[in-house]
Amino acid sequence: MTYKIIQKRRIWLGISVVLLAVAFYAIFAWGLKLGIDFTGGTLLEAKFGANKPSVVEVSDAVQDLKLSSLSVQPSDTSVILRFQENSEEVHQKVLASLRKLDSVKNPVENKGTSTPALSSFEELNFTAIGPSVGLELQRKAIYSIILVLLAISLYISYAFRKVSKPVASWKYGTVTLIALFHDVVITIGFFAFLGKFWGVEVNTSFVAAVLTVLGFSVHDTIVVFDRIRENLPKSADNFEDTVNRSVNQTVVRSINTSMTVLLVLLSIVLFGGLSIKYFAMALLVGIFFGTYSSIFLASPLVVILEKWQNRKRSN
Image 1 (cartoon, rainbow, N blue to C red):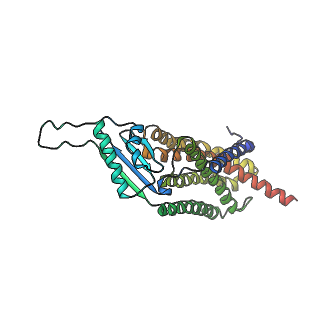
Image 2 (spheres, rainbow, N blue to C red; image 1 turned 180 degrees about the vertical axis):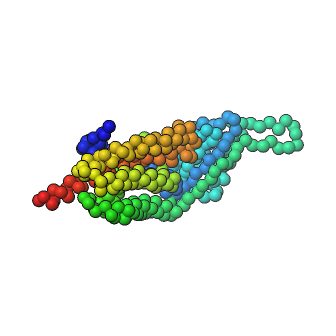
Image 3 (cartoon, rainbow, N blue to C red; image 1 turned 45 degrees about the vertical axis):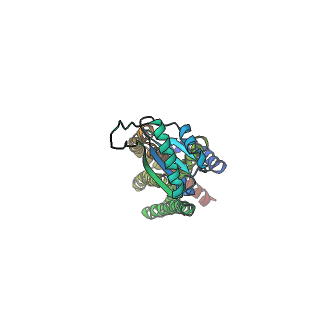
């Protein structure tokens, strides 16, 4: 059975336009909540004893230090603190305050032995980044995404160089670029929404997730375009019907491949640790919409370009 996917392109394009409009609003109205990787600051993760203090108790313990932009997040077995100051002096003062809190929450009895009691407190992670390094990482992140988009577009144009009729090869590259832009903007908009209402920050792992999404999405798009390229020389149908048949031949494979990845990512989001949760969530959102754009956006856009081209010729 052949589904009329391309023939219903106005519906799919309408959905993409709405999603992009919402994503752009979130990006420009709220922006991304940048983590210390981009703004500079300190991330400190500490493990307490059996009686882990609450977020309020941790915040109260370091209140006298007057830390700027302090954020305290509980994890399964630890607490993560983020703040702007990144000097070693502040670092040691924070540790001293947290150790004192742990000694109150988890008192250890020596029982009269000569061996001193061991503290249950442990510093698991300490990362300090200066503001100049953060700005440099911001620039590099933007440059890397732009370069990857351009490189992918040029590669598609080269790979389809022998497909000149009825749509020139460079137009496949342009359509791929539009689809990838669509995926990136929606993913960024989603995290702007999370940052606004749940305080979710983005860091260098988010950039890595976006680049991974680009690679996965372009792979899916190439599978569809490659089937179009194979069917064109031997097809007796018009271009629109040929593209629709090609999409139908690959849609099950694309969805099945994506579903296996999405199920794994969903399990990581639900049951994984905090350090990898939002990286997996970025992949989950990006790959979902990347699959959508490969099937319901890229191929319809190729047909639209072909129809515009025919109209110009007829005029």
